[in-house]
Length: 523
Image (cartoon, rainbow, N blue to C red; front, side):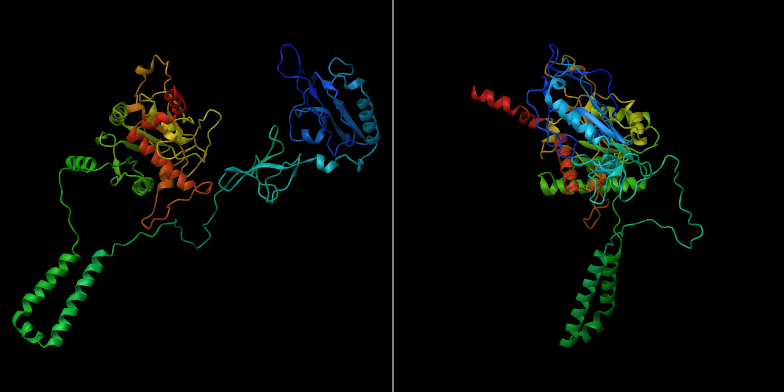
């Protein structure tokens, strides 16, 4: 009735850790419902069933650890059942017990039923359906099934519907997949040539600076009020006769001064860049040349700077966009690099500057911003265009060995206590330099070692800047996926931890060793 695995399972042997198993209680809707479970029966060896979507419904009796002992199903006008032990006592003493006879009698009694198998036996419809396990939402993220999802037949091969949303159905050991599209389906673009419609994209209304107009209007109203008061006082006539022309000229001069656009002083570009960078702590980001990406990243770094000023003692200046091939990078403790899919490899000058920056204590955050396109696999890696572009960049850098951020890493506790580092997405993996062990003899020769134990490189795909980006009115620029409660708050907290990590080093590493330090103090 079920698929079997090759070989058997041995319990209680001299080379096994598992002890012989006892029978579990019979289910209330199975053919053995109501039978007493003997406590003296043990199983030393059994044939294992291959897990699949309907194994649980075909299991009529199980061991205490949940593995099937008796399986069966209806076929035609009869039933097929299998005891997963031998007929003698070498594997189990069940065949020599009275319970075995009662179980056989129950199977024989029910074998003649076709549509109504009798009391305590699951119906055919129940055996042939599986419940939803995990489903996909509109953003392609896994989550719990909605209340409208219904069990589906095990032979369901159609496209997903509202009652059967896409996802996995059945037990976790052997789930069945339901896809949104069939294998032969092809997505075609919508033909709008016959429609009299104008194509436009969503844009955010840009604020208009009214400070000059309001100040000029206030000054004009003040002058009008002064003139009216002078006229009511009777002395305006003499003033107009004597100084009419100078007054008009002065009024015109003041208005032209207020309405004229200020012209900034121009200095040497390199000196101005250096003075701006060293006058105040600033975060930096790499300018990609894509106006949409650069505007979002700039807004994201500005939003993180504002959050730092609100939550910490750091009052950083406005973020600075840099070109690694021409700008000096040593002024900045942290550089955020949004990786563009399909972008050409940076010039060698930029690679050399980034490599020197990392070796001299700087930290670069590479963000591929594509976690939703391809969630990380078992090893944490993904094969997205953004990740391929990142590999092209890192292939010329002296990058140390990387690892996913461990739970005990200093980055998880520099300011906030965090378990992960979400951005617009929360399914991506965050990578840092592998910390050397205490007995690592090659620790001194590791490439691009960060200063004070700080990782010179951080890699993520969660689009951190997209979650930090704020409009001038303080509202978020981009939505989050999947939009869990407080996801944006935790994204900002992740940014705070990263900035504090790059600025303060590993001074909070003692928290990792707090139990050992307390033990030493006690001694």
